[in-house]
Image (cartoon, rainbow, N blue to C red; front, top):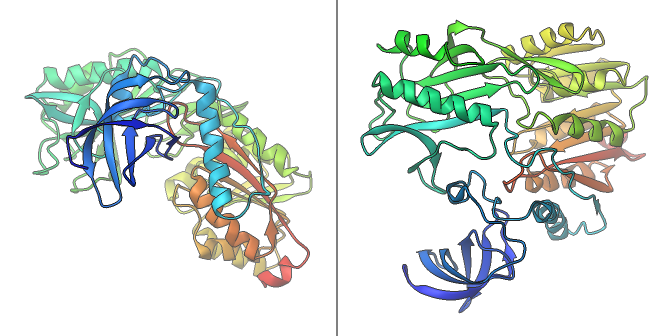
Length: 456
């Protein structure tokens, strides 16, 4: 097999990244945008020892599950890499990710629920972070091509709230008008690296964030004056990121005009969101996710809950009305401040928030005799550390509610909990990110009789 070779392939499966899987002369070939059951003529793009990557030149036999995609760039970039698949089949694909990982871990007896569909299939994202680069001599916004840093200019981001798309284009045009230089990541010069817009589904207010190489730039007053005239924009923030890095946001934010927070809702609760706050991307699906977790946890009125990755308090405050007390833990100081403010905003008095590492704070609480009935965890994609798992078990909770955004690290962590005598019998997938391969899920682990002794 050689690069640029054209071959016919029968697609038999989808990879976890939603690439078509085929086999040719003992090699596995991953074909972008191909679907199981299709026969395609494909061009080989890259050849490794045991596998290769290819793109479709022609579909010779088309799957009935294929959708004609208007935004083909979204599929090509990975921005919406499932957009060519019918939505009900996307839900099946996400459930199968969980099923297949359980099989590999010899946990076939675990029940996997049907994936909870999102109320919105497109236009659901309440935040966009898009790179800003120079393409053919002109400042552009867009998305990087899959597995590259080549910018594909875009004005319609498909999964993002259409109002956000309009503001992204308006700000792009203002930056062009005043000849603000785009960031050059090779030479670490230029100015605007990323453009971020956050929008509240409940109020419509929008926050614009310019991620810049410097704290200030010559054209900023003119840019700010025009951005302030965009309908719905309530504030402009300059985020300073001077390092040569792939990390999007720098540590410091500077308010240029307006408000440095917007207010959104989860169910009947209001949350103030700062520039760097973590807030679930899918505003309408989030209360459904939390309600599912609360229902599956079967909380009792006298339960004491630890919210171990509390952020700005979205989970803990959603749980608070069902239990006696919530204790939230978070390492980000600004997030703790926001969580406390959000508790006051919603008149919630039984939720307290503490700054620090959960794996250090939870054992101290256990040692001092503080009761814990349920621990909620909602970690990043890398999942939990062994240190955290040990600390959670040492608190002796009856239940651990694991909200996961990565089924691979979820299954790994669940096995570690099993070793410490916490058992589970069901995983419920939730679609927080339609048109993408990502899948959220809810799992409730229950303490067996001997786990307290094991933990201590």
